[in-house]
Image 1 (tube, rainbow, N blue to C red):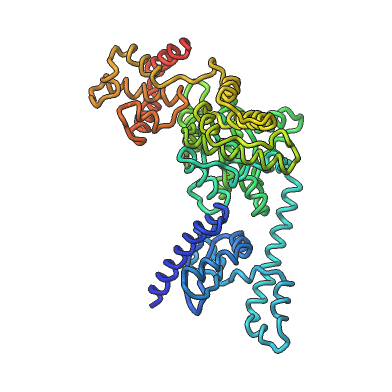
Image 2: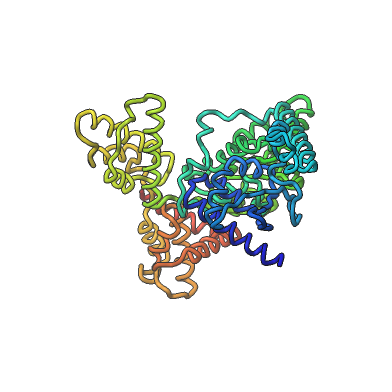
Length: 519
């Protein structure tokens, strides 16, 4: 019988989550928290779920009306939700969500009537648990305030940085895995994402995701100390401490970094060649991971690629960097660029209205946005600037009684992406590889599998990923319609070969130089 009840609870909870996602418009971060709750029983109009995070108790209480509305709709009868705290690994939790109420809330609840009926509904054990939980939470928050005050690495978040949230991140196939992983880390829900390593070319949204984690934790779970540093700041921290006349400075720095719950370091490729900093980073990394703390890293290359070259990270470092969850953010396709342009223009208009900036109050017509997406490059930061300039031009055109035209958009695009800055095409790469290996185009993109052709094909695919602002799916289309997995395999083959064979590495660099020197 118990198994049947649990099965019904699971089915009802899943239906409720589907309705919440479709109807209520809750932020993805809240939905992610709810998805990580475990339904345990359903009885007497009450669905009980458990969570390993106290933060979820607060979040559910804030969204109780929306959750219970969908719960009732899914069950076809009035339903109430109770959420209990269950530490990871425990089957259930004894403390219901309402036990996270403040002393004042409990007092108000028990004083609803004077005849003792409210008190009968609130067992003394729940009231006592509530006060104990509240005291524990207050103590935890006070300790967090003390830790934050004494650690100079914890900085206030600026107004500009505070806008880099999960809600403002524009998602597509090219970045969705990285987004979901970052959200899980922010929620503190999945230890397999430790370390989380996000890689991709500059301007594709890595920093936005890293800052979104920081903003989310600061807003929703301030008891966790979260520190964001770019590699340059990390290097400066280390070199200044080493330069100090007293060796205690280095010890204090180590203590400060050790007293962090979530450490985020951006652009770690800048540490390559900085032997002392890398050693300090390696020790800090091991200490934090060993103590169950979270690390999030971003770079323009994979961990394995950071180990290439005479100054690259050694294998002990690259193996640690890749020991958790590694995920790319890829260059945006036309579809994602269009969504980005639509989102940027809408937000800029909203900001302009709120801040009374009439020069950006106009509208860019949908057909103009489509044309902007056709002309846009792949650096998302540059696309944002492109949108601002086009919105400014559209506002000015409205003032003249017209609308922004294609020629005006073309002119702005040429200024944002000069011809000298345009990326190499996949066709350029293919021609260079065909010339070097003395093969025809049909052989390069075809299905023949003898050794010479396979090497040329792998090299051409690797160089296309390295030099061209195209998605892996786009690259696959140019190589006979090969799948995403096949393209990834070719890239991994070349990564391994150039790492182990210096002559092969030189060969690839020679082909690469022949392409870039002719631009």
